[in-house]
Image (cartoon, rainbow, N blue to C red):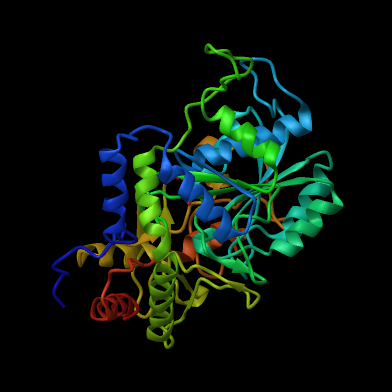
Length: 420
Ligand SMILES: *Cc1c(COP(=O)(O)O)cnc(C)c1O
């Protein structure tokens, strides 16, 4: 097989032309700052689409998560003194298998994340592990959940646990814009919600994010904090710490041009997922699963290799090795082979409890296993915790919506060749 002539990306921006018109209009009317019609329009359209009262456009999803954490912290523990975080040593339960942008805002506010293991049905926070965490830390009042790769988490079960323990929810819907759970869009299930328009997300502004809420007061507070906390006075008057987190009207022009194409992107991503599923039906693998009560946005298609088809694979902090066996493979071999053919895959998000920066933070599993002893996947050994297990056996496949069917068929052949 020849290598791909053009690179096959994991997930790259897909522009349509309208974006340029909205950017051009911003330029020609000189609304080249953090106010303007594009911003007003994307806030209105996304709030309508997701089904919430207010959307506040911000510089990125991480900023939205930070202000969500700050709002929750202030509501739970009061306004902090300058230099202190709103969480100030308090613990927060957080999904373990995710991108670190989900977790870092807890640290920005001086809280301590307690990581909750994933489950195998949706690869998101395990409600049983969450319940266990409340048994161990009954004082915790805040939970951060995420919908990984665009697949909704077990929202009702998680909400029930949170209600029982009187905890607030932050929903990180950065990867799941357009996905639904029991017919409702993700991004409105939490007390505070965040989405992202980062370059590789389902639609993009090149960067950008939003805070979503039904609360007028919260929306106003986020708006104020995101513009350096200016008070309503003739001069620059400040009573609180502020941030420069607003979205630019140019970026908003890109987002505005993308919104009409969200459904089309989701349909393309779903077709990719289905084609992989069919292409791999005879291999000892499964695709990233979802529950029948949800409809993902299929942002990334992922693969999980069956335990008996895994060859030995060892991962260090920055490198990986494996021992090839006939009929068996591992994510490292598949990713290296894809790269050889000029196609981009990616490991599953490395769980937070395995990250050097968070290695001292507590980690709760449903089965009581706790932290795995090593990162090695050794066939026949005691299963690792769910997050470490999916990290060991799983990978993200090239999921770019501009990939042709022929190109995807070739990706399928490349993956198949690793099982030879
Ligand atoms: C992309 C992403 C974010 C952060 O969004 P940015 O806009 O890049 O700041 C947060 N959480 C998850 C799960 C993400 O994938």
